[in-house]
Image 1: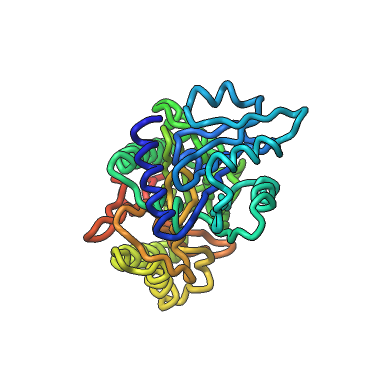
Image 2: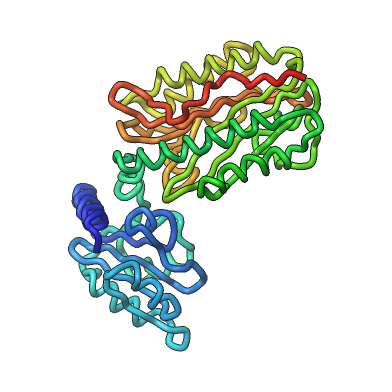
Length: 366
């Protein structure tokens, strides 16, 4: 077992003790990836990592055992299709001290049938999700994680600049998206999403990039992300082709002011909902509150969307090391949309923006 995995398991067990958790059960997915650096092939066969107070063990389908053994030396309790998982699960649970389990944390992202398999084997045990234990650890990024996120942000800046250089009337949304994908791929990053919303398409926050042709007078929302390594990028910027649509400058200034208000509110000890309120109040006071139709931000890490969520109802207390987006927007149906998004890491004195790209619109002369 690597030193990093050992340290994370030790830190996780300290949190388990702090919150009176006897066992944590993870399925193949982001939580296991963060903890161990890998996860077995996910399918309908129960595959579980059981973490007790002193010992950990895998319930492992025979089909995945050999490949998974290359990534970990944690004990396997292997089962095959002919016999089913029940006996192997019982042995794995015994291995990690399940007889004394009174409180179990289950991975909120695992398959429901996997979770029920464990809960049925632990009658009477109280169950909860990972937010106070592993989830809380994932929200706080260390310096090595910061460096990888910063590197991914630089690749996104480069891809966005490629779009700035290529955009012109007559180019399709898809063609512009492909240019950014090529930039990512040339740098060894895997493109994850490319939203290009030209003109009135920009009023749909999650517009499906299509064959709409870019025209003179279009305001274009570009939201992109890619992954190199464990973590990924996420950034949204605006392009204006030719003469901006009526009211564009005013709305852009309002969204920028909302970003700045959220940045000012984001401090260790603040509640996530206070950051959302800071951005939302700016937009509401300017008369556009009904056109800000989503939360102010989301966490970024192993997953593109993960805690902390910067919403109007979140009581999560922000802490140094947390990484999240600040991305208010205004979406005017039939006209245009504006979203400005930066990923920040929260430092003791406030947010550090990972991107080096200004939030001002890129203006294209035609």
